[in-house]
Image 1 (tube, helix red, strand yellow):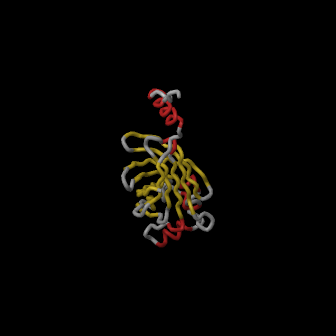
Image 2 (cartoon, rainbow, N blue to C red; image 1 turned 30 degrees about the horizontal axis):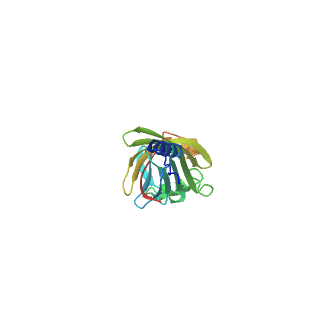
Image 3 (cartoon, rainbow, N blue to C red; image 1 turned 90 degrees about the vertical axis):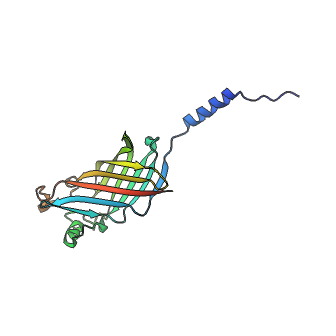
Length: 189
């Protein structure tokens, strides 16, 4: 009988390195958990007001070590927008603003992520709102853990999406820029 030959440890190590190097980098998949918020802020005649989008849904694939595989997908039901003022809320639902009869939801998708230093990142994505798609950059911090937290902000130019047209287009009455902020608590999928 001939003795069995085993591959040298160097060849085994080289094969393992090659296998891992050619494996695609992946990110962890997360779903939104309770305790998450999505807030907008603007002004009307100089008075600041804020509102929320209850019922929004966020799906995330993210690993800071593999940003090339990251994905962010947010669905925002516009029919639920609340600012604490019933007159303003009904105006937001109207054809001059969100036009929820035609466009009940907004959607944000990002597949390009950049590290900004520390635990800060930027997601370059597209916001679909009122039938218009425009690029929007979302900056955020990432706090890992059993229930990771993404806390971020973006600025949306409302007139780019036809929000507040007609008599409402005057940026002295309502600024063009609307601040968006969010805190999303996640659970692993």
